[in-house]
Picture 1 (spheres, rainbow, N blue to C red):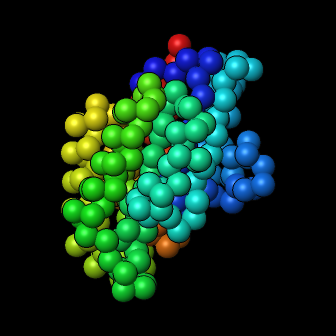
Picture 2 (spheres, rainbow, N blue to C red):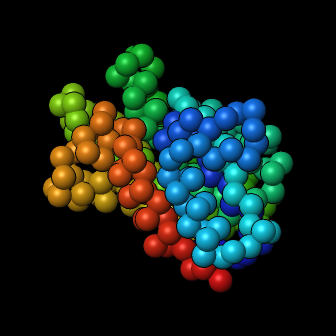
Length: 208
């Protein structure tokens, strides 16, 4: 994944990407992994032409992302699109009795990637949704998450996208520090967890 000094990089997804961004300010990046990545890229490339945008929205599922794809993605004409979506497709089954099947998740995600492929000449990065088992009820969520992880991995191959394997990475790091150190509720990263995502993303970036 080569990053050019004049790239327009768009990050989209749910609350993990959103991370408190000011929706009234289209250039605001929030305080999570997107801001960490942006700071590193801006310092390394030292390019006023580099543009970084955050269009994550808390609570979004893949269907929501698809529903707003025109104004919040295609119309912005990014050269790099980074997507982290899926955990709410799992979570709503358990807190709202509103499940998303793996097939429905795949259909929505595939349509997003097809639209990007057909309408943009953009490099695509797919970040796995991830889950840590804290509190303990998160263990039960694996039944729903794992098939969706398979979908993301399959689509990364099919669409020649860069895959950032966050679920395995967080599982590994939870052997080095307690799971809550990385994500206090198993889903939303702490500052350390956000830095972990940023580092994983940047490790896959070939900086021109």
